Length: 287
Ligand code: 13P
Image (cartoon, rainbow, N blue to C red; front, side, top):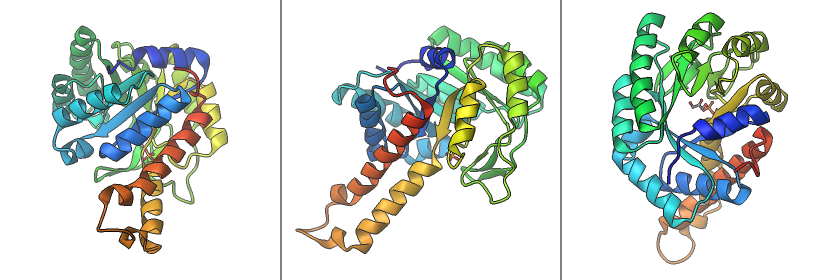
């Protein structure tokens, strides 16, 4: 059964560790993440971008696949299925399709409009027992073709949005999606500290988990980050493992072409990446 992310994040914030959100793109990706979470007894959040949702033919397919996989693999750790950077319409469609958690990214709207739309979605989620993430201050980098520059959120705006009753809050603190550029200035812990001071127990979310140095991850967790999103690192690991397999000519060995064998090294590489992150985030054994 899929669960809301509320309980796992409340526990993570109180216990000073973070739950990883790993984005999924297909069946192999999903299976690798679920098996690793189960092996490590870690709670986990599966993120689905709107682009990935479309690729997998729609949110209903994703929801049905993940729910059935949790059951048939005998997964016992808490699993939340979460819309990543959802639009207002996307959020509603995922609620309808059976997701257990959504993110409404209203960060590109003026703050009043972000608040009004977030408020409406909070009411729907509350009624259905679904967790909801809001965003203040855009998170830079490229995601589904949208490129932005990492900015720092205004702590007062964070407080306004947190007070709407969201489950978790993503606030820009100089983080960006994808690979960090050479001249990246690092996370703004001053901003994070100010946001946590205003928002209290609210679990904070760190997007752009790929490529953030370990010491910064640990410091962010100590300052209230309870959920960390990772996507690009799994993609890079998958691509590298698949490339090596093909370059070694292994895809041509044996009888005929076997797509299951071709995808296996990438799936193993995702497992290794997820394991490394869960250990770093401190969520191992917390299920
Ligand atoms: P990365 O792709 O940088 O790991 O970021 C993932 C993310 O924040 C998804 O919302």
